[in-house]
Image (cartoon, rainbow, N blue to C red):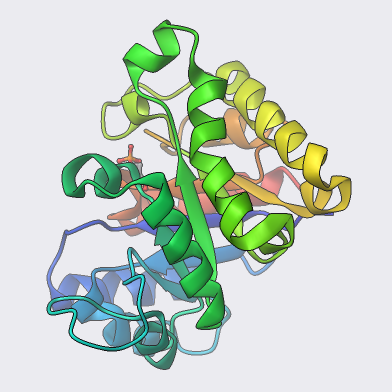
Length: 251
Ligand code: 13P
């Protein structure tokens, strides 16, 4: 079946020493029967790649440029990330969408570019509180997914991960309940299944938004939740490792 994944998105936190220590601590104790991924800031990618060594913990970036080369000052390409040892890259995180104005069309181009560079994109999707309260969650998610189908086809999702991160749950301490998250994950899997039942069955669906050591097991215990994308709780080895352990227990 689907092998669980727990990914830590460090966002713009820490300094090099912390990156090295945290990565080494995770590498030493991470369970070996799930996929564990660390997504540090760009300048610390190689530090983290070196610190995790070859124990199976992998490294991803938090963003990439929609182009491979050229006059794009301040940007980093998928090829550069792959060469730095990344296997994965986040695309369309809600902070990229809301703070940096990324549109779903741009996110879809980045998704495609990541795959062309040999990386696995982790496509982040999610609705705001207003959208949820207006009963528009599935419409919003559909609007975020459709450009990816248009750009990469459903086959693109065979080499990708989706992270459902309700905007209202990110960094707020207010996680979706396991039932709310499961309902949305089931909707997402059914939506992909309309395009391809095989791709939907194999697709990893991570939940993100205020996942902590004490709520991880109940979230990961849901049928369509295959792991988590962890922000704040990934900045401390003990809490991140406890969340990884909770994913192991659900297999
Ligand atoms: P928190 O776990 O801090 O809510 O962040 C979630 C997130 O945005 C991960 O990408």
